[in-house]
Length: 166
Image (tube, rainbow, N blue to C red; front, side):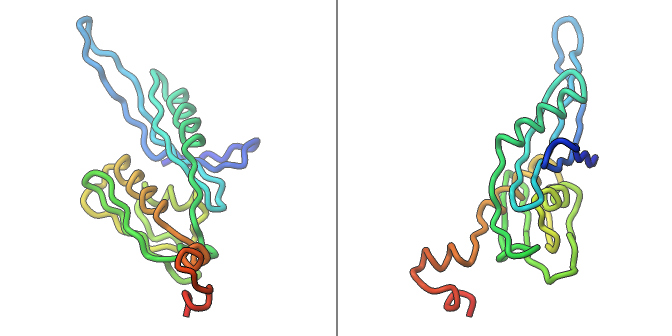
């Protein structure tokens, strides 16, 4: 996992996985690379992208462009998540649990990258079913999309924030 913070951009990005892929054709084998990249602003916005090219730097830049186009806003409560959530994609399940201040990011490689670029500083996570980075990243984003702020829940239920939080 590579951390590349570019000076001109306000985004942080992590290269989660680089794979050499092969296409077998009549004349032999065509090699290319796929790069899974997560990008975020560290303030509650993040996205992921999969770039494919014949050279690694080109695959990374394509993945970064795709990730910037796919950015989603994440409801945060301070430095942690507002509530427990589970994301699923394929055989992968990712459990995301809010943690108290000072806990840190307790997560494996792919989920750790997602949490760091999104700006989540205190969280407990668990990957169940698969540790395939592509499916784990997609499951983590599916879970993050489910998050709702207490204000949004109160508005939806027609109650005050105090009634929701207790």
